[in-house]
Length: 342
Image 1 (cartoon, rainbow, N blue to C red):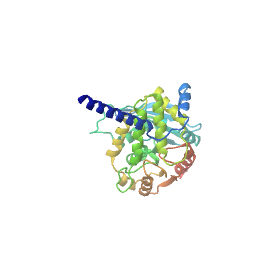
Image 2 (cartoon, helix red, strand yellow):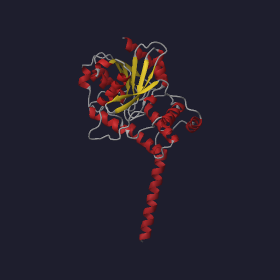
Image 3 (tube, helix red, strand yellow):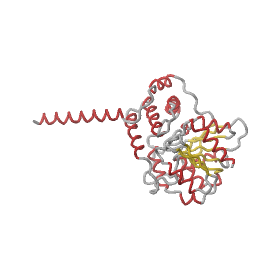
């Protein structure tokens, strides 16, 4: 009898494991049909050089912050400081965006947030005493100091938009203008729609599907799947080759991807609280950009930011989710440069 019971339990556990494996292997969005072929081609080819400017490190307290300065062909009209989103590094910026800014005569500075890329990964991070968005804004100021740049047009996406807002509040003299994209001024405002739990669940599914065996191919697929989730109902295609090249460059030429970055930077967002009161009295020229199909940070957060900040200009992009696809960059760059010159 005991043997029969143990056999039954074994069969149930085996069936459950198979069911979980099937669920994981089929979870998340479908990838483009030629994804594996493109990945194989990229893995077998020489990678393009994705860092082409002058690089260095800034010291922000005890933290080393990696940066890159990309200069235009002529004397710069000004500086654009790029701040990327949560758990992503400087290499994630679309090359077309940087090219368009430099063609317009601006020097571009991008940097790795702490805990990402070539900047320091904080092994002694303490959940009881975490860093904040203010600390991350200080990192951006440290980069400007290292390059002897008095002020810059600060251009931040998602969490980077929050860091840019913080920098505008506490280091006003260093910010020539603020551009906050697909971001929020208070991500936990109870009067606004919250971050989409459905989107978070989709991320969890693809993380389980491709993250259990994190080889190069699966990490690329995880990034492609994440981009598909972030585009929401927008109708542009994901450039699998560009994603594959970016991922492999990070894995082979840099430090790769920090699995703790999302937790630690999300904590920074939460402990920093609302910026509503400070932004109501902000006089820095401000542009708010948001995709109308954003599946992660609802469009209403962009509307609220624009309503709060005095005289804020706006750009609402129809075919844009929580991403910067090439199809939107001309419109975004044109509006941003016009904003600089207003």
